[in-house]
Image (tube, rainbow, N blue to C red; front, side, top):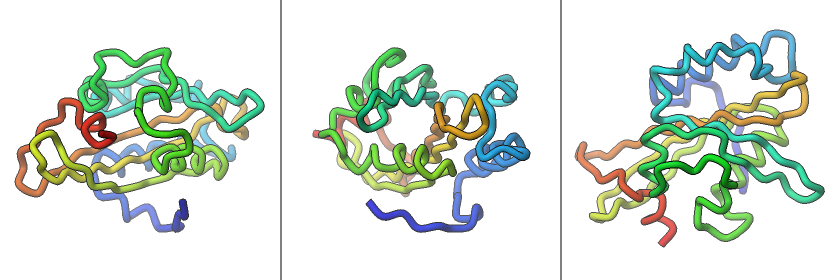
Length: 170
């Protein structure tokens, strides 16, 4: 999957723009921000649309262990609680699917990755979802955690969030 480098103003959702600035402020002199310097209280207002993943490198391609996901993320993946599961297990897509490519890009590039995709809900309505992936590192260099922020938008305003990502995979 090819990724284009763009300015931060391409991010459309206000909450995601705030998160991108939050990430930039916390980076300081490091390659990527250190997670331990983040006051998670600042993230409460957007936590329903967040997912926090640990990056696990076991000799092969990195895998992403879900540490936390908000209520909205639980609805779209059809699971009340995905903590302790790997993202590739929850996504119900083949290994190496384009959705995982963005996560690998965030790790390899040590930079935010923003994507927009269009999927259909269970009623067939087109829903755009915007995903912002923000890499973090304990040592400020090697990415070992990703904060993922999602926004879901439908042109006619109404759509069904339940199992939205499951319906897309099917």
